[in-house]
Amino acid sequence: MPRRIVITGAGGMVGRVLTARARGEQRDVVALTSADCDITDPVAVSRRIGAADVVINCAAYTAVDAAEADEPRARAVNADGPGHLARACADAGAVLIHLSTDYVFSGDFGSGPPRPYDTDDPTGPLNVYGRTKLAGERAALAAGAEAYVVRTAWVYEGTQGGDFVAGMRRTAAQGGVVEVVADQIGSPTYAGDLAGALLEIADGRVSAPVLHAANAGPASRFDQARAVFELVGADPDRVRPVRGDLHPRPARRPAYSALSGQRSAAAGLTPLRPWREALASALGATG
Image: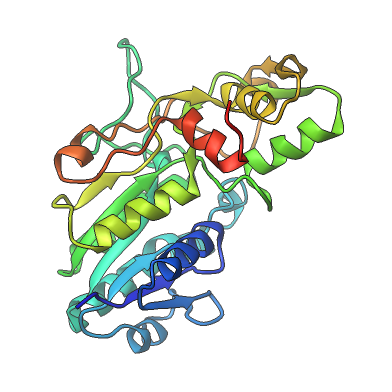
């Protein structure tokens, strides 16, 4: 019998996409927004989790720059919250799937060339957001529940809201040029593909506790923006490369944080398709 899926953080982008996909597959889904279940409240969490549930935690404090000045709140949501969920899952006999981030890595490869990070590479977050997310990973795995940490990166839906792809799509339609950072490399990931990976893990097909689920291939924000322009029929030369240090922000970002899915594939997770193919699908384009 399929297990009930409880989605926390269902009001956010990944939570919304995951809920829609799970319901589209006729699964038994309980979608909890932060108003329905505040994961920083252990009592509220324990009331929502039952025996044999699969809890997919999409709740997070994701304002990377704001977290620098709001560490207590970031820690409550990103670190303490997953711990509460994990303990409740352990008590109930439920499974926890906790969503994490590429920002647990530093992007520092010393004198060697950068390469996509795999699940067993050393972590070293550069900012409050990354440190609290790493603490959340550890809390999720330490409580004794059957738990999985799923790192992803640069997630977008592309059609609405404030994600990077949606923003570039609006800019492409408005005319003019845009400067985009060319020296930060990551793994652009389509939320629809990430949702599929999370449901595959929920079905018990994967054997490793730490996984990477990101569309394949490294790209800079500049690469991603140019691809958006191309795929919607705008002139990609309107996208101009710029160094990140010319647009300083409160939180340091890793210069390179692309994720490898090699070990995750070996553990049973179906590899996500290349990032540009996923972007074309998200935009409804064929290019």
